Image (cartoon, rainbow, N blue to C red):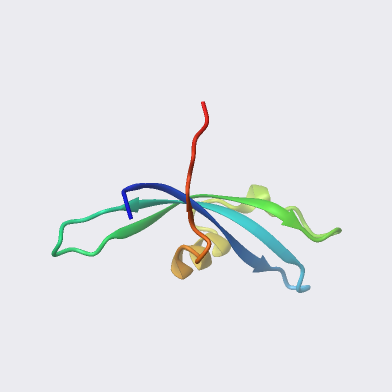
Length: 86
C-alpha cells in the first residue's frame, strides 16, 4: 500500500440502536522496515442515518467517543484510495 489518503465506511449506533453510517478519511504513513506502518484518522462525516435520529455530524470532532472508537477499530475492509478530482 502506498502512502496517502484513504477512505472507508464505519458504523455507529446511538442509545436507541439507530444506525449511523460514517465516512472516515485515513492517512496511511509508510515507515521504515524496522518500524510499523501507521494509520492516522483525519476526518469523520455522517453519510446516512435513520429518520428521527439526532444529528451527530457536528459532534464528530477529534477526541469524541465515536472518534476514539473508530480510531481504535482502525480502517475497515472496504478502504479505498481517495481520488481527488480537481
